[in-house]
Image 1 (cartoon, rainbow, N blue to C red):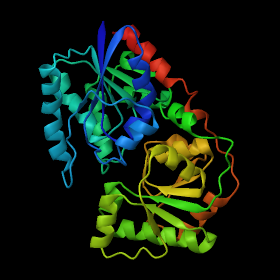
Image 2 (cartoon, helix red, strand yellow; image 1 turned 60 degrees about the vertical axis):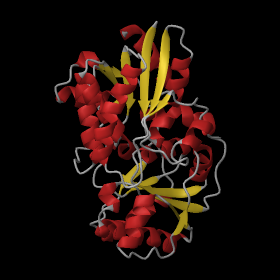
Image 3 (cartoon, rainbow, N blue to C red; image 1 turned 180 degrees about the vertical axis):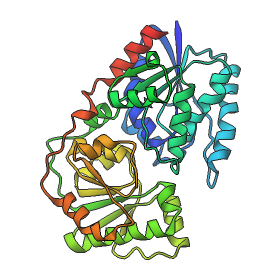
Length: 354
């Protein structure tokens, strides 16, 4: 019997890996070991998602997260803890699967050096903006992986241009569709009773001028539409708002919430202002436009298919036109997200390659 280890660490990973985890648990040809790095440890960013998505408890939790723990401290702890967990418990994986671009995927480096085979789901994604820690993480993981599972053919081409062998790459579609469609009621049109503001990337919250302009834009949205702005309470963002002594104006803070509740919360929004990568995909399936306050995106397909638009914070003259885009009638193409069979494809490929 083969052994597959999946490693997850943050909220988006739990969602995107949920169907793969459940399918691997039910395969007669392999033993599946689920390891939680503990990067996200708060119940609202971890435990509630396991419940909402009906994911079993992890076999091991490495507990690398913690208040005020830096990214390099997390990385320094994770590799040794992961390897020690495998050795101590006599786990000899045929492949170790990572997903995404969080700090957790950097454990792929020491694992590969120790001779383990690595698979990376969500590979080939590039923003070409190395101010993003995630851009560095995803590149590193791609280049040490034995197998790359990419969402689209253009991600495959980006990986090939970087010298990665085409033989390692599998186009499988997007993993977000299955869990979202399992939870969302697509017949529900929503009440359009708020605008969600979701800011949690360091390239925004660590810079006073960018954060100040995002707040200004959000207040403009409220002034022009009369719709309340609901800002998600990410601790580091709120901490910096206070330290920078910024005035939120009309913006209301709301607690983070579980996946089921948040899906309905998205459906009830007029539009979303978010620097999240996942927010350029999930709302598209729900027909909700997204304004992205970033200079670059690793998901250009979302822009090209009229699902989202980049907000240039250095060009305040265009703020009103961005708002007009978000509130006008539009045709949103979601075919780029795939057919919703990604978990099945990945498990089938894993069986073939190992």
